[in-house]
Figure 1 (tube, helix red, strand yellow):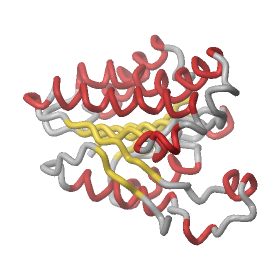
Figure 2: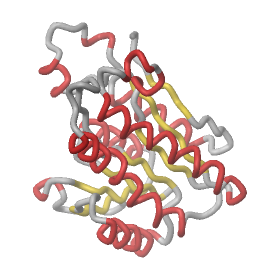
Figure 3: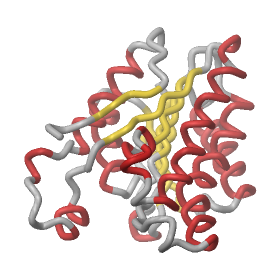
Length: 222
């Protein structure tokens, strides 16, 4: 399978890359840092890109299809977190989170859908607080941006089901990453979901395209 992975140098993205590479998939990795995008190898192309740029995103999808013939899987992991209740955030905060969490996905989804063959799958990254207004109230800008990701998946599944293309939203609890450990040093890291566990989940659904889960919860012990 030929799979495009955005955020390939992130904590989650790199775990997904390693898992899917180990299974023999060809990976087209999109990187945010120049030093990480060097030294492509057989079956693992690396590309530096600003995914907030729609033209750059469209061009990189064209390049991925040219390199591998077709892309039949995509895992879009780029995003970022921001806290704050409605009294704390500004409209600029909200727009910034939308740009980071939604635009970076939509700018790839649009050109991918134009070229993906039947049976292809898209994996987007949601957020657990979106499933509960009580949690959402403390992460307003982040939550509103991630709500758009859920809606995007719903639209894809409504519009492209007849083409056999499906979208999943992976909804993790707190992911066990170095930045999260530093930010929440007093919490029990054993309760958090590991990036490798999320990668395993994505791998499972890639192997079973007949399973149209839509929302996939990937929680640790929380």
